[in-house]
Image 1 (cartoon, one colour):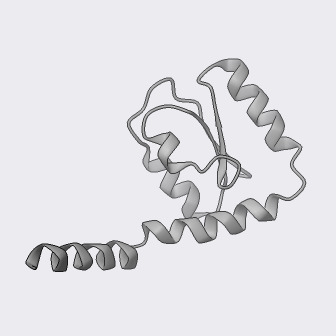
Image 2 (tube, rainbow, N blue to C red):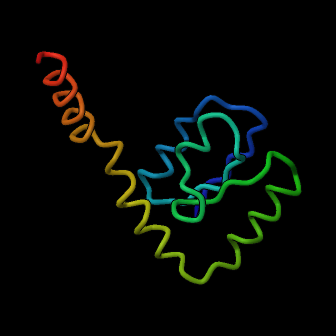
Length: 100
């Protein structure tokens, strides 16, 4: 696929977002719940209103982008924030901070 569309009306979060990033695919998602915290608008995908018009106009915008590779590169950099290595580093830093 070229992009992942998440047309949720409501959501807390979605594992589909992480799978999408694993494959360096941009996300077109409604601006609801935790999804708006995962998708970096116009960097790793696009956020839109949770309406048919919002979704369709955002898909149309995606179909006309010229620099698709920029989104893939942004995703490759951004997904490092969700790596196990980054998680463990932050966890150790937190544990060290409460020991003091």
